Image 1 (cartoon, rainbow, N blue to C red):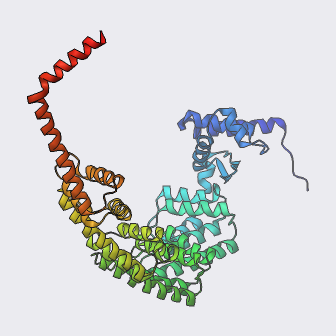
Image 2 (cartoon, rainbow, N blue to C red; image 1 turned 30 degrees about the vertical axis):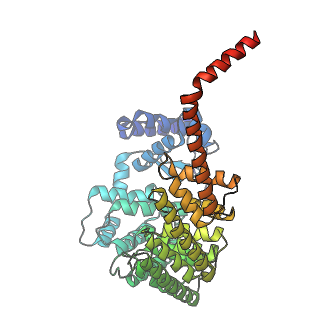
Length: 478
């Protein structure tokens, strides 16, 4: 039988009643901007064929401001957001607030809700918010009841309705509107929840429910990275070095394993053995530079992988560099890194050849200390000093000649610079031995003495004669 249709007049009457209901029940207490957005949305978007971004531009308002207004009306129960990504929503026009209240006072449904919460007595506001799961989010009542049971099972009957509301919104957005979908969702969540709880228990955090962030991590490890629960438990053995093990710390370990292809339980255990041996070697290095600790950090491991994997140094070479750092009172891996980087630049990778070079450096340093002592300065020889000394020796100067030049430079304003200057003069004059240097010094001293004597003789005996000769020369010129 064909349903009777409403006349235009009847539809106008209903529309007027609905508008009065909106004004008296909702608009009078709402922010003016929200009323404007609702009215414009109803006028321009109710057909569902308009673009939401164009609508925001029409209002000259931001996407988030408009969405906040729509969420406000959703909370009031006169609009339902179906998808908050592309912003699809439906209008819910209520004819009569009293009729709505009568709808939500069904004794049977209320009794079922109260029975699920047990000894906790629901207030009227909590009832109304639970009703909104159906009216706003579109979840059927049987799905809402299953949702409540699931949340209470997870959090206890003291769980806030605000938390349950977030879960209800998430279910609505995922399209969980049947009992079958809800059961499947709960089974999957329980799988992650129970698995995550077992990991927490394995780390010593017993009788604690995992947070949503921790469940998300477990979901990533199993679903995205492919770890089994047993493999994750095996990876927990690597967290013993951490002072406070956590799932976040475990996440870093599993990430490293995943990147190295260690996913199965056997592979994880083998990786653990390698990591344990590596940690022992790192502790030996730290001990060599004077740092006693059982905690191996990610920074320690990063340095060690750099020295072994990138530079190619053996453990004995790294320990040798650590010994140098300790002798120089530089107890840090950063200083060890500088030593090893320098060795790499010199292409020194084997300990015997490194020790040979070190022996040569030590000998050079001792010789330079003698030079510095003769100059009268106190400093530790540097690489630049060793380069200069090597150059002087290659130019043919003996150590004794360099010491003599240093002694002669002692009373100058810049002794070290004068030493370089003096050796430059001696090289140009071919002075390469101590005897040559002494003879040159004696000759210079004798010449200087003769020059002074001649100057004195001119001054005493011939000064007048020189003056007469000069006058005679002037007469000749005339």
